[in-house]
Image (tube, rainbow, N blue to C red; front, side, top):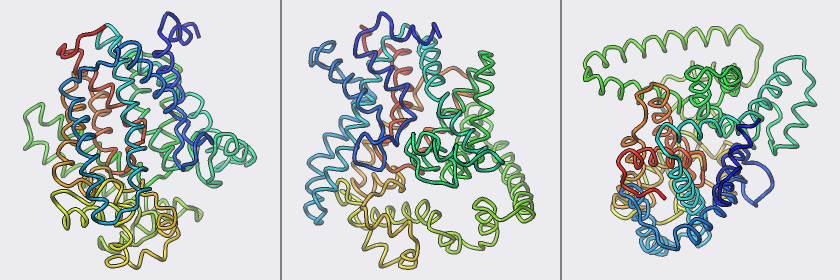
Length: 445
């Protein structure tokens, strides 16, 4: 407890706001704003940015050679995004939604970059940040365990109902934790597990070992398609990157073939196990996947699959039709309807798709596809130049845990379409700060 309290001692008000923002990072369903995604942390990160900007930086910020690409993208997106939106008739509300979400991420990234740069070294930064994040996810992981017991064991279901009421979850039969729905909580659990593994097994903190086991178990119990897809993509990125470091790509390809074959065998065992179990959301989805013989069949298995696979395909179709400048800031929600009716009208049978058409929120596409469809080649180059540079150039310890954590953040945009998703910006801020510390591109104050 003394170490926890030490994070609030002898620090400026801006730094204390950053610590509070990190501690509240998992809570994104509390009624603090009129949107589906409600990260309470954004208020603290925004306050911290204002204090850093006016009091510490004296309204003079020198952007480093990673952050400058993010600023270039933002500067380009304003005239280009608005002009193309007006040209294609994209409603002003979509444009403002885009910039509101992007500014949430921008303020988070900049405030945390300023904050992390105050630590003396790379090692100190990693130690402090991973420790704070471990504290932040303790209560949400406990809540997930209680929900899992209430759903899958004789524990009273009233526990699940109370937790949903408190944290803002709305799915009664699946684990929500501190989020509104399972898919969001699964992403939280997936991104925190490398941190807990590092604290528990590398630093040998017993309580963090327990949290790691609980986080891993509840992630699997979430049975989130988006979570499993990100995990699979991250594993491939991690494996190929490690092979590239060892300069043994030929052997890597052979091992990858063996890995795919092993996964295929394991999936068959999983399908058999599901067929022997009582019918549930999890077992039905596994059996449905096992019967799909083509991409088309898999795409239309259910609404959840179409949202996570079909939406990115539509975004890519928009890009191929408008490759140079895209269709404007926030325009995917507007252009989506015509492409859906023309090419994927069967998806109108799914409640999830109808809900997105009604609300106009398109967070379940991918940022990678979305930035191409809305800003074309120029905007995509600027944003992806920043994104990849933040992670790939980071001077992280040659530790498999951190390499895999970086792979997770590279994979995350494949199933996350919101620029306002704060855990993504926390990771980007940390990795880019490690790069800056190692090369002294920015003078520490």
